[in-house]
Image (cartoon, rainbow, N blue to C red; front, side, top):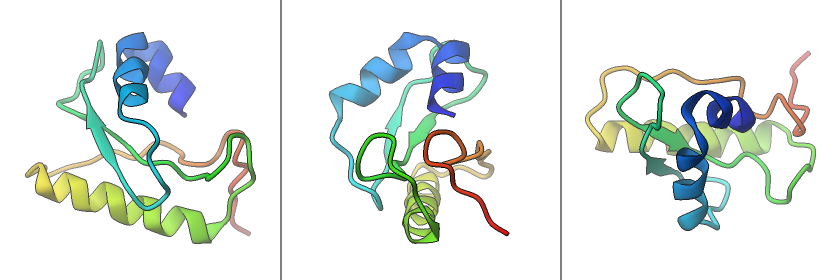
Length: 93
């Protein structure tokens, strides 16, 4: 989903996120939104190594980190893309 956010919002989102890297699983950062119709983009990694498969043990801390940062930002709503559904191949049965 990071690729879709970059395509829709513009390269500035990824550039800002990369300037704050590395971000460990279980942590979150916030960036500007580029061309997206939103106030913030919250980034939460779901994998420790690029293109590694992930499981629930990675998704839970990522979701908690996103929700914590959203609360700190005073947000009343948040939208989640399909986290980990690309190269991470996360799925449930």
